[in-house]
Amino acid sequence: MRYTQFASPLGEILLAGDERGLARLVLLDGEASLEVDEEWQRDDDGFDAAREQVLAYLDGRRRSFSLALSPQGSDFQRQVWAALLRIPYGETRTYGELARRLGRDGAARAIGAASGANPLPLLIPCHRVVAADGMGGYSGGAALKARLLGLESPP
Image: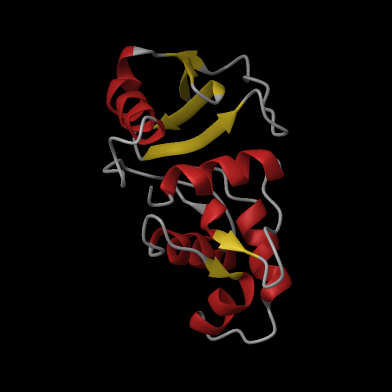
């Protein structure tokens, strides 16, 4: 696995992936963390496009990403992550809505768990899924989720 690490308005971000695509995005200053495996190789040049797209998104100059993604997870998790990718910029869905759209009525908690296991936050926009009665959880913490939703809100 190759990786890079860079500064962003959200603090340090680590991107990791291989020839299939990006497998991890970790907001190192948030509640999530990741230790770099000693077998991983740093490759700052190999992640230029991903770094630029993430920074452009955080700067409000980009609304979507055109990057190869290769998240690792169960079939159900990958199904949920694919559904997250279909939520348009600036919009939200509730966990229950997402469950219904996936034909899994009553699976809101499972949707939440799969969303929380998303290894590519920002790129797979799990911050766009909210609870029926409020914000809901986020791997980077509630303050970061609110900040990302605010970034995508119309002025």
